[in-house]
Image 1 (tube, rainbow, N blue to C red):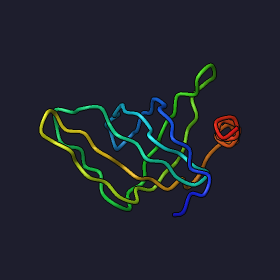
Image 2 (cartoon, one colour):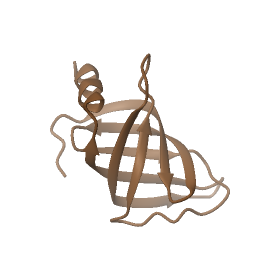
Image 3 (spheres, one colour):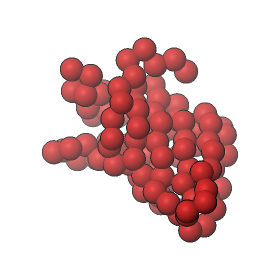
Length: 106
């Protein structure tokens, strides 16, 4: 996944992984992927490379943007609570994501 239009951002994000919902922030996004880090967790998540999940980005001044993503890579960062760094490929995005990305890239 090459992202020639990658943009460094700091947007609130929420992932739905099975029955769990996890809060975090995106660090970079592009047309076909994103990188995010979760807030510290007290328990382990079951996130595996190749798994699919819904990601909800908070769009400043507008409604949320929902993305269906596939995990490209994931790693845990202990020791104070547990955070996850996750690289994801966007499989399906609504039109409002392309509009948000266009605004961010300008």
